[in-house]
Image (cartoon, rainbow, N blue to C red; front, top):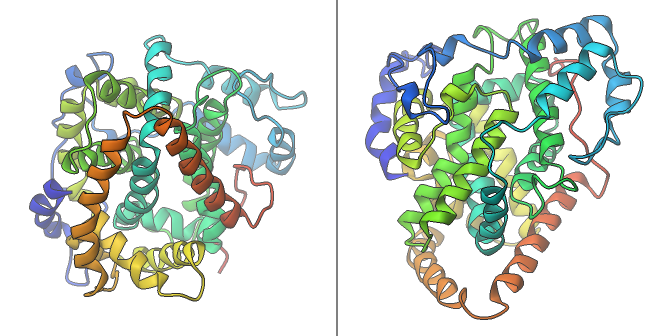
Length: 399
């Protein structure tokens, strides 16, 4: 992210003598709601807004002790068109029925076009959203703290597997079709966020106010579609205007289903880039927790690729290439003097070679089969072959 590299030094002003960033950014919220998907809004700072619909539902579930029962009931709720199971508390049933509704501005044609785009560009998107976005997220202090001190921080393989369920769902061919599961994964994730907000404030290790604000979700959102589109543009991947808008749209709909208010969801890539430039750099920096999480994630990736070989240095070099030197140093990803220049030299050649093949008959289908095999292999590794579902947590990280 060249823009982050130029602006990232500004974020250092938020750090104290011990490298601990302030939870409050110095930059005021100035992004105009006229740039949002609905073109209007209150102009309220998203740092001070959370999820007024999901938060009381999660708190009530946790305080009443019914979460284990709810998780069992929701275990087999898998499809977008599937009715909710009987036995859910009425207030949860009503919330989910409302939360699963696509916004009025959702465009089915664009969602289908996004699926076709994901089909032909899956290699880049899996790499950028998985490795690249993962490295950026561990360099976001508030996100690193939220992950580390919540229940998921104690078992990162399980945490990454469950996070991957949503990411892979967004990129699937039937994401928002009736037989897809993106609605389900997004709504479950929204409930998890609300539960983590409630639980972390009870942790003796937590000292950063109410977690996962609207801005926090936006910051993470920009490490996914905004970052991925910028990198593909940087790599000169040919993308039509229609495909570009379709890819943005599938993530706009996903943001809405995650509980982001429409007034904060960018309407165009120009608006998304402007919002990213305002909120991402000031919210990034090094933390001990982020460094530890990075090491765990890269260790997992190295084991996936080729256990016991030179894969970890290669994974380190790839992560540094995708995240950029500043983020890589914040994450304390080791420098790899052999692999780094090789990847930097060969990757653009690989992209050009691959893009030269894409227009040929059957190549998009073949590419999708390969990309999908990679996705399924990664998910199988992370889950150890066990069925994995997104579940509402009931505790924080132990200890």
